[in-house]
Image 1 (cartoon, rainbow, N blue to C red):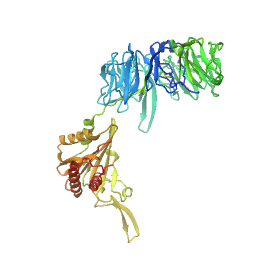
Image 2: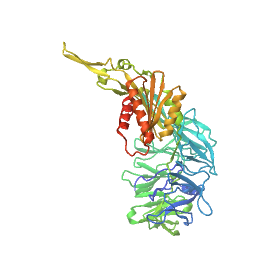
Image 3: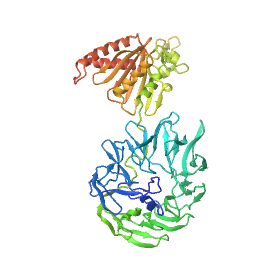
Image 4: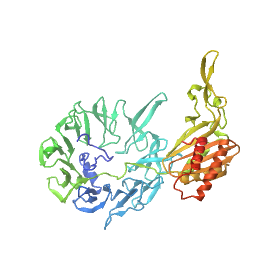
Length: 594
């Protein structure tokens, strides 16, 4: 089992589905697990999840179908149904934590606060009673799309829809403005952030260390490849020309010998590493090797001791002192120190809870153990979706006679001035990327449909040569704005678009349903008509402009009238009549939908 360490932002590794990882440093496990009340386990191979306390006693037996998080600072989360719930410890069983049910995302309790996301809402922060304390509101008009899963030293990192990162404080105010490409959690008053530097022709990502005021403490030197984005026991891990290094809080470097090729974990005194042969050893912070690399793995134990194994098949884990001397042998494949809980020890298909002498704690063996801080993703994402704002943006793209600088009935030759006609030979449709827009959880693309081929072949019989030229008869027949969203659009979205159009002076002409296919409508304003089409089930919509007097508009209008009328008389129809297909094809021809 190589390269198993996974950081959880608290200087301690985590266990995922009984794959043991180290506990992150001298007494770090003691400090971390002091705030852990219960750990999730399974009591049978295919059983439900239970939870145990530090005495090894089963508290909630076979309580949960899905894996809960640890009970940390009195609360834990678990996936239930279509979302997540957060529970607190109750005298008769787990109790729902305030309002924290049916969540899209759930973080962990830290400093009396938990970031969560309710369905179709912005990210909220709950207080120690499970009540909403504040919402992560837009920052300078830009939606907050995600944040980290917990507060660290009073600050919560976040990302806006324009991919800028900053920090909120514990009151919901912006403590450090979003100005970074990435932002790690704070530790010892410091955090690692990144920013883009250079000009439009030559850019690079620069990593810097900031304090809680957002001031730069030092920059990570060029050529240093960071392997950790958060300080752990006062150091960052990086590599330089394949040499392992640690960077302290002043930016000073601890460089290790070449034979220490990769660092797995470290604390304030020691570094666990592996060499090119993937053998594990221990060095001090001066680079002196104190335990030779001859083990299959090494973990931190309590105090200045270590847990080491030469070969898991031997089912023998050694407890070593700081000089590598053997203190005791434990007859297990793998052992991990968990602070006040003792040690989880793997033997075959089961896991036992034991003390430092190898004696069992409690009366149960486990088939799975988990020490994750959250049941959902470590990133808490917003589920906010403002239909009216998106509809206003969509409708706002429509100008007096078209979209942007493109007008209905405008000749192709005028639109594509300066471009090669051969690129548009015998085509009737083309995308216009320059007119596209994107925002939080949506994007809008623009497509033109012409009445005739945009460019045609012009052959000169006198010279026996030819070339492509713009077709003088080719004009814009319709302009389509195709909306794609991350959320369902449907009837609510259709009504929202109609509302936005009417607010801009468009008059409703025909609106109805196309059987079980879509909601459709035609609105008019001056010399133009606008078609709106939204599938009943889906995450898209199409708004298309055309000349109100064109034959295509008349055909679509006629077909819509027929289909809508029949739809009202035959709501229970299980098949789609031919005239519906005709109407849909007519709309697609004019609107160029998708």
